[in-house]
Every structure is written in C-alpha cells, then in structure tokens.
Length: 475
Ligand SMILES: *Cc1c(COP(=O)(O)O)cnc(C)c1O
Image (cartoon, helix red, strand yellow):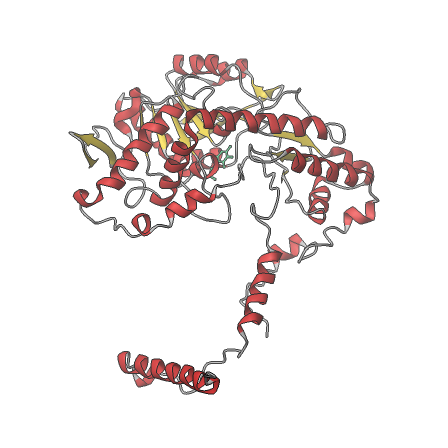
C-alpha cells in the first residue's frame, strides 16, 4: 500500500496544533502579558539552521580544532571520557542539601580525591572548596594570616619574585598585605635578595616552581630555610604542577601551603570562563586552619567535618565545584601515578624539543633547559619594525592559536609557549615551520594579519574605548 504522505503532513500539523492548545490550557498567561502577534521567528528549514550553526562553530578555535600553545595556562587535550562521566545523571543531579547518608558515593570520591591530591602535593591535608587558582591563593594567604595571628604576630608583607603570575600580587593586595617584589637573577630567585627581604614582617613567600619562565628553581629548599627562619610560611602556586607531577612535590621542597589548578593539570578544559577548581593543600603545621567543611571518613562512613579547630571558615558556597572534582578524580585514577609521571616527562620533552627548534628563529633568554614551558623573546621582529603581537596574529593565518604574549614582563617582547604532553612531533614540527616561514615574510603580510580568519585584525584601542555590545541574528 502506498503510504498517504498528505495524511502524514496533516498529522504533524495537527500534533503541533494540539500541543499549542495544550500549552495554552496548561499555562494560561494573564491577559496583560500575553502576546497579540505571533513571534518573528524566521521560518527556515532544518538544514539551513544546521549549516548556520555549523559555520559559526567552524569560526571558533578550540583545543578540539588545533594546537593551543598558551603558556601558563596548560591548555592540554582534555580526555572525553572524563566529560562523559561528569555528564551522567548520577553526577549532575545530586542536590547539595541532600543528607549525607544519601551522598556516600560522592563523599567517598571527594575524600579519596583529598588523599590523592595530598599525595601528589606532598601535603598532609586538602580542602576541595576554592573555585580557582587565584581563589586558592587567597585561601592560602588567609590561612597564613590566621596562623600568624594565633601566634600573636602581626606580619603584613608577602614576598614574591618579579616572575610571579599576575594573580599572585592581586591576591596579596586584595587581602591588604604589602607586596615585596624581589628581582630575579638569571631568571630565578636571587637568594641574597630573598634573605634581605625576609624578616619579622614576612607573612609568606609565594612562588611557582618551575617559575613562569619554565625554569626550575633548584634553590627551593634554601628559600624555604630562609623564609622559615624568618618565621614566614611558604606558598606554592600549583599552576605549573604539570612539570613536576610524580617527580617531586611542593611538600618535598618544604612548602607549607599550595593550590592545585584542577582545570590546568587534571583534565578540565581551561579558559572561556568555565568553572575551575583550586583545592588547597597544607602541611600538618597549618592543617587545622583549612576552610570547612572537609570530608572525613569514620568507620567506613563519609561525612562533612565542620569542626576544624582553627578553620578560617567557608570560602565558597557548598563544597567546591563538584563536577570538576569528579573529572580530576577520574583522570588521576585512569592515569595512575605512573601515567601522571609520564605526562610530566612528555610535557617537558615536548617543551624542550620545540624550544630547540624555535631557538633558531627567535631569542631564548636565560639559559637552556626548560620544564613544561619556555619563554622566547620576539625582539627580532623589531628589525622589521614589527612586534611580537604581529607574529602572534600571523600565526592565526597558519591555523594555530597564538601563544601567550607579553608575559612574563621580565622578557622583552615575550612569547610564552607550552606545548603540553599530548601534542605529537608532527604538530610541533608544523608549528616550528610556521614560525620559521613567518620570520622570512615581508613586513606588509605580517602587519596586516590575520587574513584567513573569520575576523581580521581589530583595532584593540577602539574596541576597548568604544565597545559595541549587541546581540544579533543574521536574517
Ligand atoms: C593560571 C595561573 C594562576 C591562577 O589560576 P586561576 O585558576 O586562573 O585563577 C596562578 N599562577 C599561575 C602561574 C598561573 O598560570
């Protein structure tokens, strides 16, 4: 029998009509806010809409599209299995107010994650609450403040090197501490300068190791000695953990407090304003100061512990960004300690392989070997009366995301590159070739880049001074 296509079409319309009617009957709107005219929704076939949104998605550039060498951000390839697990209803539907007896599975995962992170950081205990690295810094400094206060000490200074990431001085000033910046020597902390700066006013010394130049601070233990002798605490900014995981720990370097950027090192995509997570780890000395609640285990049952003796209190609503915590947990278990260690090895190998290739075209200040990232100077661009920014823009035409530029400020015309452990030799070779070709190109070509992207070069000053924020749908 030939099916009656007309009938099928008719039925579809009837269904829509019925649905609309039901909606009206179920949700009668007050007259005053009901529509008089049909909304102006363009009447488009599905394939046109699919093409439209597909085209938009191709204009975007992300880690799933190509190489993303942003330094100090660890844009690593985030495995899809963690995303998949974090989108299961068992993970997304629990309510923060549901009783502990009904959340034993989640609490167990949080408790185990606390232990795993403590082990990876060489710390004694961990709070999963802080929502990002910067939030961890603030939490850590609050702990240091309370610790000194309880000992009857007023210490109002925080020391950090001039290579510090911008969030470090920002956290310090948000808490009303005085910032003491010490100059680096050959890219690393100058012990004499630290010795001079440390004293009875020192609340803490903050550093990331390897530092933002990608150099490992081999004097970390001497730094700890200097700061501890002065009565201060040591804070480890864990953003660069991808370079030391499984090899050493901040605890082994005698740091007292640290944060982990789960969205950098442990599998949650970073950037774009998505939720982050910056658990804080501490050694025994300051364990009782952690924010509450922390998860504890008692006779095989898991519960929130609100009774830490000297706790600084809560730093976030509820218990931390649960789904980011879950992804980190799954990633750590999936990789195992050996897997994490080999991720570190590959990250460092990739970084040094690319550094060696790029050194031929751009300048590398401060010695040779780097950890997971390295910083080049684009000052050669000045020969053509161009800047690092022009090189970064031209890279977009070659299909690469630009590296971090103009940070750290210590390096003239800086380009900060972090290839991460997941990129292949072919990708790194391709990127190096792109830089090599750009360095041979005519000034005009570079100056006007990018030409192959959805949006060309924008006037950044005008964009800031004269921003037009609007929502627009093309007809
Ligand atoms: C990213 C980063 C931070 C801040 O971490 P957020 O999670 O972005 O707040 C601090 N220090 C260094 C070195 C970083 O790279």
